[in-house]
Length: 312
Image (tube, rainbow, N blue to C red):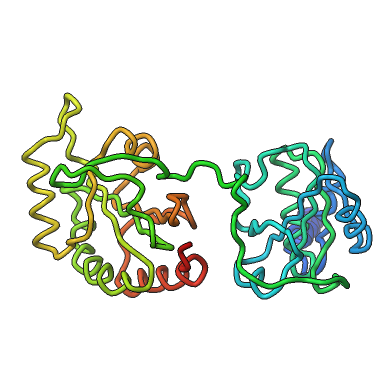
């Protein structure tokens, strides 16, 4: 009896393992069974269209938003004219700023169809009500264009640091004009008590000088110089000046003004935390938590400059 029970349990275990393996991702260009089930199960499932059907919608004269969910480099090599760029991996748990209307008709595509299916599912889960996946650009028989993506002016919205005001460590007024002429600005939030922050500042100073001619600048925000009454603590401010001078981090450092506290420091849970913004003060890429090596920062800088290095 015990042997029979053991055999039965073994069969159940094998069946369970088989079910888990069926949930692995489908090859690029295919929609997995779980993705298809997700698309059919919700009250607002997304649609699938052929390339011909999608082209007919684009030419209909109706307001249609076409979304390319590939990478920046793939988009630049060739895309459907007028398509917005929203990489699939950037679609998270909040509404993308590029898609402010949840009831808009949205047509998504990628290279072969896998990422567009994932993106259609995620957008539907975010509450978008009219999403259609028309697969991969490899099956698109119509014309495409080349060139990097630029966010349309009407969709840009206020940037993370657009219109901010603050003071530097010497009390001089600073505003968002500091971003002009730089395709990428690194905004490094640090504190005078933070060992890892201070350890990376010497090579940040070196990198600031090296990359300035390539369209990238570094700006620091010293986060811990406020007194209890909201004024700037002079002793801590002087310490911040000394640290910047002694480490060779002689790039611009900002005091935590009300704008910076609201827009940047409110989302910082640990230091150092680093953001990147474009020439308009809009955030680009993801925030990076923690200190990095010099080589790691070089890699980040080079990748961002490849995508955003040409300031307008």
